[in-house]
Amino acid sequence: MIVMRTFKLFVYLLLTPALVLAQDQDMMPMNQDQMSMGDSLVWRMAPMDMSMPMMPGLENELPITAPFLPGSGMDPMMFPEGIPRQVVFMADGDTLHLEASLIRRTIGDKMFVMYGYNRQYPGPLIRADRGSTVVVEFTNNIKMPTTVHWHGLRLDNRFDGVPEVTQAPVRNGESFTYEVYFRDTGIYWYHPHMREDIQQDLGLYGNMLVDPLEEDYYPPVNREEVVILDDILMDASGLYPFGESAATHALMGRFGNVMLVNGETSYDLVVDKGSVVRFFLTNVANSRTFNVVFDGAPIKIVASDVSKFEHDAWITSVVIAPAERYVVDVRFPESRSYSMTNTIQAINHFRGEFYPHIDTLGTINVGSSAADPDLRESFASLRTNIDVTADIDTFRPYFNKEIDYEINMIVEVENLPLPIVRLMEIDTLYVPPMEWNDAMPMMNWLSSADQVHWILEDVATGRRNMDIGWVFQQGDIKKIRLFNNPKSFHPMNHPFHMHGQRFLVLSLDGVPNTNLVWKDTAIVPVGSTMDILLDASNPGKWMAHCHISEHLHAGMMMMFEVLQSEAAQ
Image 1 (cartoon, one colour):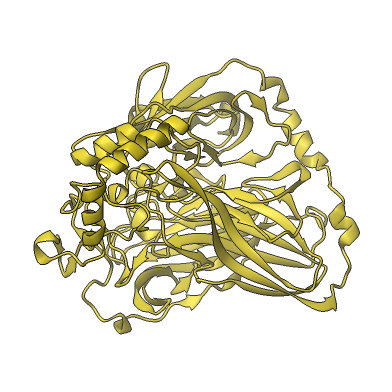
Image 2: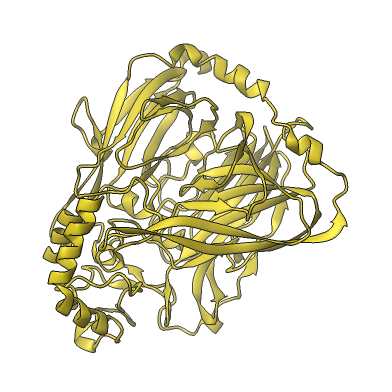
């Protein structure tokens, strides 16, 4: 670390005059010769933290794709105003009509055009009992083709929402009918699986809350809150454009600079003193991993993606990567305001420095009246979930089996501007295991999915990304090793997601996991080795990929097939 900082400081001092000039130019609007035209849009300078100066030589660089925003050049007042999310309670066999369309949103003092499901932000919260199946009649009224992926659900493969794999893209004006089966209790979400770097980031996402059939499935609480965490990238002109033909921000993913909770810039909750609140948390950000803290209030973790944990546990914060979900119970014992914050150690890549950073996500205002009922005793108890342990016990004989498949996570680049390549050669002297912020916004913006190739490599065969085609039999239990190689061009943490199945994280860097939970998404830090045990129970052709949207569109995806057993046919 000291060597890295010394070397970077030397480079910084050597280039200081040029950097000062670059900073001055960064603070000024680009002239017409520096802009790229895309219909009525032009590229603007990427929003930057001025403590992270632009590298010399990048002053006139632009992404190789034209800029894109929906409704560009049109008056936002032409579009219907978005409305807050509504809860839709659905019984087995019910039908929901879901429409993707353009809506008008105001964030801060800026009004612009975004996307919405049923004009809502987020989309409707679908709430149903475990074991039920609902019909969703989806209509696409945006210009871009799209689909709906029901993230985390072990549903029929025909309805997984992967274009050209499980269905054709739903084009403008077309419809598709999904049958959505809720096999497992928990919190899930839905989103597009086409250009989600744009569509998801601009509002096409929503939750599904699957209720248990058992009354005591979770510990008792005074209140439940479904919370979606997100961020969005803005500058003085409003929404910052996306790449039209290819995703920009392909190195680190598109980090936003405005935090959103349930689509809003603030989250306010009023509860009684001593209340225990259950938060169903989902991270829908393109790239940002959140570290959620509740201002000293005690936090008990209860469940994650596809099940409860084997036992409840006390935690000090909730680290939640893109596409992950966590269920936590929080008790607010004092009559005061508690801040819900994203509390991180940010990094300045150029200077090689870490620094504390806090984003306020919301406020929980606790009144003077005592909560009724008083749940302090039940909250203080950490439950052991024998139902989860009994389920996992079936798989324990396979924990120490040999590795069946091994994936190497790497990145390769081509045709990037030379200053970016040179800085990356310096930067990889030290690589943090997690990227909590965009520490190189100019270089990240200039790196498109046509120039950056994120790779899942099958170690045994050397096959990469969509050339990988694992084939399992229904009922197979496979041990998979994920290695995030720190020696590639610019390694980054990866939230690895497998469609239609569930898996256990057995160990990280050789340390066994002593509190297991069924997952569909797990983040692999840079330099880490993660062993997972896959329950290949759901037949069909499925996708696995990094859930950083820009990494997905830069190629980091693969296919696997689960063949239906004869007994199930």
